[in-house]
Length: 360
Image 1 (cartoon, rainbow, N blue to C red):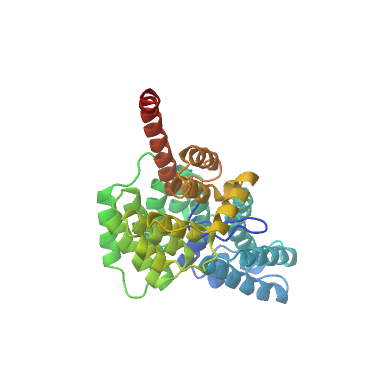
Image 2: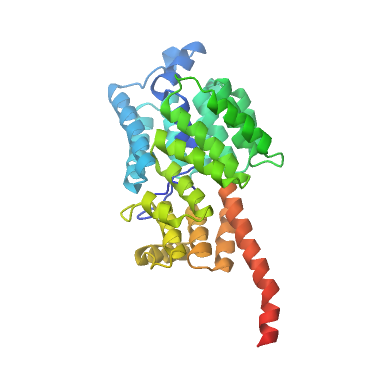
């Protein structure tokens, strides 16, 4: 499921490519929650954690989440969960603590818990930008585009962020964006002012890349993903860039992009696809991990498992089964694309099987 994926050891988790960890690029987290609190008359109650250690914990938590986003190490997510629990214990009524706990829960694929934390924040500050953006991201991941759009409209964010938020939400709706929408957004990107922060620029380029990928415009998707990765190296952008290269039949470039020593599970699957395409032997350790996760019925890694089964193991039957089961947890555009590919291969198999039987 997206993208930058932590190696599924221990408690087996993945990065949400969702975009919760990307959405933080839109807002200066360390100050924005306090600023909105004062604007809405809640400054005295929610401006800062109740005790001094909580402030240090919040800073460490933000740094740990960013480390997980960039490197995909599962130990970073484990550490983030410990810090989030400590922060909530020290300041249970602090809205910033709730928001950070929601980010951690989303990264761990605990979407219900994440939305519950966000409900607390949004009850006090309905127009809060970071909380609404994160809620929209989670709902989009779940395929709830209409609800996500409501949060995009409600959020106190600038017009470009709102446009990107709405495009992402519409991607999982019947009225999904078309090539004309992509062209308009690309023109906006070309006119970005110099003051836009690199991480925000990266998120905007990744949004354009995802839309181009949904439209099967892979050369344009590749260009946007390259821009995103150059602005902010992260496993999410690296995985998206690798997918574009694979779609364009450039496996050598995938191996150059993803080193053999990577620990991120999703990136290892991309590398395995590239080695398979080149006729080289694949990672036996990865094969063992995939088998173990399948035995566990691990839906948190359904996309990566389905991808491996479809393209590396060439087992469309099991790929379709795990991908379809994963839809109960997450329904991003990439999940739908993989499921359709598996179904297409199964349809082809059912068509050719009678001919094969008749010939034998």
